[in-house]
Image (cartoon, rainbow, N blue to C red):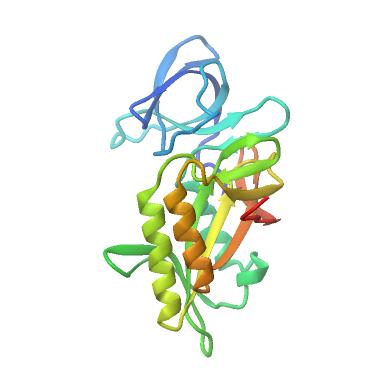
Length: 236
């Protein structure tokens, strides 16, 4: 998924009200950018960090910039926009670039199911059980190389796991897919200390037959692309 507008570098001044961030551009001017991330962004919102913003001239948008990346300045990046995984995955799934899911012909995003929920992707094909795929963006890293989810309590995330479990009970396949928007991650796990209820819902879902997959990302200021499988370890 290529960014529609070339990103520009900036320095983070502060992130506040969850969805707003003040930043300083290269010319010294200060702007406010939209931060499309409802999580805590632990370790990713420290003042002085180098970040990358996507400009826009859309009159329908209140802000002229969107915060897209954290630049760790060691060759690694983190994508902070939680809308990116679904957009990047849609193309990868349609092009059958995710090997474990390549045998499904039809990919439908945002399909209503369960109790007032929408599944990120419903995959169907003749002669196969429907596959319900829920996607989560992973950005937390407290130990080098280890990506964790979630970075804050997510009641909604636990509900999604219950919905997936219910789909399995109805004879369908269901998958929890963690897309790691960090180029410095080599393993994925759960942050059970941050949200034990989510971890319990995860364990119940897996015990009921919900599948789990983690994928890496290739990230540059030009594009974010879905990468290879990453090992998911519930207990380290």
